[in-house]
Image (cartoon, rainbow, N blue to C red; front, side):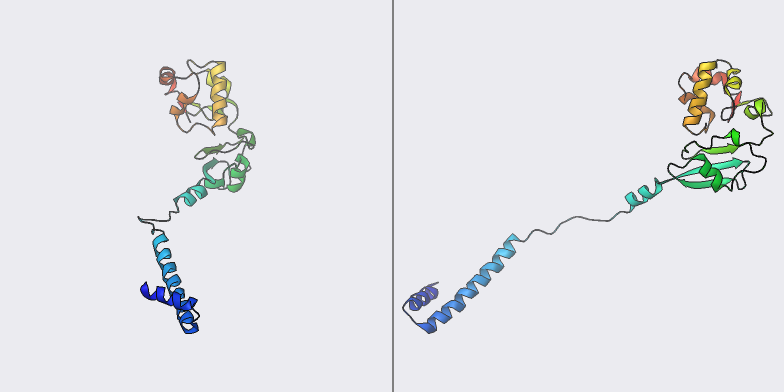
Length: 199
């Protein structure tokens, strides 16, 4: 510092050689000071483990599709992947279309599909009561009309209508236990009809 002080005094007295040395010294001091400031203010590097996960992207892609099982009077029965918002007509088209024996009135082609449902296309020969009952006399929850449902113990017109409404809104019954999801049906009523119904 004493040397720098003497150099400043000499520069002020008009010594050009000293002035040049002073400028060089000052430039060095400024450079060192800048380096010190940068080192002091440099942010700390992040710590911990970081990883990029593709789970969210995979979930987004998965949620864009649904799976349905198409059986009965279609050209190529099987399971099909369709976009969210697809309608029953799209599933029938994916399965190759209806056969000549298909009863297109047995399904609502305009209905929106739900993931995991089974679509059954019946033949023309399965009309009337035969379409809603099996050879063993059980009532089909997914095919029966209101009159057939009303033949079950404890099922009246209002409850039969709610069963049909639930069936249409949810893409059909996937198990007999789904009856418990219908408003007005409890464990007691289910136990009374469980042996009389099928899908």
